[in-house]
Amino acid sequence: MRRRILQSTLLVVAITALVLGGPLAITTWRLVEDIHRADLTQRLEQVAARLDNPGAGDRIDIAAIELAVPTGGRLVLELTGRPPRVIGAEVGPDPVSETLPFAPGGTITLAEPLSAMRTEQVQVTLVVLLLVVLSIGTGAVVATVTARRLAEPLRGVADRAARLGAGDFRSVADRHGIPELDRVSDVLDTSAAALAELVQRERALVGDVSHQLRSRLTALQLRLDELTTHPDPSARREAVAALEQAERLSAVLDELLEAARAARAAGAEPQDLREGLAVVADEWRPALRGAGRSLKVRVPDGLLARVTPARLREAVGALLDNALQHGSGTVTLSARAAESSLLVEVSDAGPGVPEELVPHVFDRGVSVGSSTGLGLALARALVEADGGRLELSRPRPPTFTIFLPAARADDVVGAVRPASSPR
Image 1 (cartoon, rainbow, N blue to C red):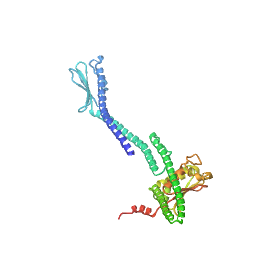
Image 2: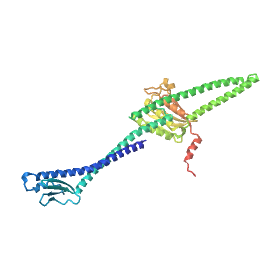
Image 3: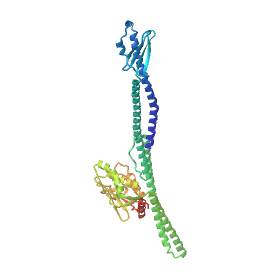
Image 4: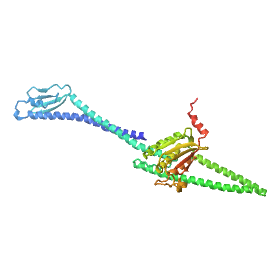
């Protein structure tokens, strides 16, 4: 996009410079010649006026006439019945000359070397061409600035849309000063909020439905299990058959839930937590430093999680933003391995979460300050999309823990294999 804007603008500037610069250079060339000839004619008129002076008689004031002859020029006076009178030096072949009649049958001719006029023509034309080149350069600078001013916001909007597709539903407060692009950003923020609410409702519905189905299936299996001890053989057979169907239905429900989780985590890949969390820490250190606080990172080597990097980055960023807005003191970002998962923890030295908000801290719209209360809800949604979970493991001082699935052996092998050199 930036290259296209730059190329199109430069093309317009170049065409304009060629269309205007060529005729302007030709016009300037001819204008210099007209000015030289007009100057010669003016000088001739001055000489003719002095020669036509009635008080001069037959005497010619040569000293006064020589003042009208340009440097390197030559004046020729031709009077009837008299030999031509020449004032000045030889002007060479093909000079620039003008002739003016005076007195009965007399003429005066004033000439100057062609090289003098050509030198001035070249100088003035070069100045015009220099101005054309300067205008092209100015146009190139303006085109570069305009292309950058348009391309950077477009790239930011594209990145925002990409993060939205990756599951990052956080709004972005930055605007670009271009009404059309700011409108797109506003629409993206509105869409992000709507999608976040839709995803949360969908996951809540799936969770509620799965919980209710499991409860009903469990109750049904218990009743059928009791019927398998019925004294009537036919009733026992029907109970056993129904129990088998209930168990199959329970297995199908497990498979559907697992398939849904796998579909949400389709973009997950092995991620070195030390490397991934270092990027997030570098992004948030300036903001914490500006608030007079520091960020400590404690992540050992060798922790490979199966996550979507963009989702992990945004989820941890939301937790760091929460610590910046509502916490105090040093913020600690750490990671460690547990029995069945990897843990990423974000803590600070603040007063923590009020007791009455602990059960609702991840609910949408719940906040202890003036914020929107979306950050923690979106962070949990992002983590759950990759098959993990986010919990408030300690309210005071606050510690949020992300439980991430560890990378499987086939994920690690699959990630390493393409890097090996072909044999």
